Length: 279
Image (cartoon, rainbow, N blue to C red):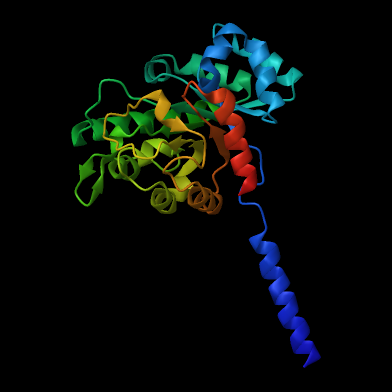
């Protein structure tokens, strides 16, 4: 009887320890776009602000008039790194070699595109054209430069098609070795999709994630656009952040970046960091 009691006690203690484990024990990264105005005025000082928040992993989507080597030096001086480099679709298609060299100089492993211009509203024909181009870009980045291509969804891809959406067409027709996703959870929620279900469906294809939250009460559409004030601190909006993080952890997402497009980042970013620690 004593042995059985001990086994039950050990079992209960194990459950308690598991329940108290942090859901997001690591530090998030930061998208440079969050501090776009600050970087434009004082690049080095903005890096100091970010590292002062305990964040060392960066995704740059702008070089802010500096060379990649200059930025790399400033990152190295602060013990920071750049894991992902975001560029325009035109730059990636027309200047692939330059983009790749900048990414490698920065130290990035991923090259990301967040918008395919002049394809909104998205149609099946445009989706199929996009998949062909993505496959070519991803194959070249992987074979010639050892880089991984990620597409950052922006909401317009979730137009209905058959039993799914045009996002499903993108995933079905792109090569899983060459094309991956940086999942922006706000731009999944905004057009009416479910971020948790999407992560569960496409987990292995999702390498990067933008952590952000959408103001409660906002009803979205397929435009890929909303007021910047609709970005709120994590946990204050309508997205199931704990559910997203649990699914992302299981899926093996490699990098998580805070993105907040609002004019209230001075208060909202520390609040988002504190929220992640509390989970």
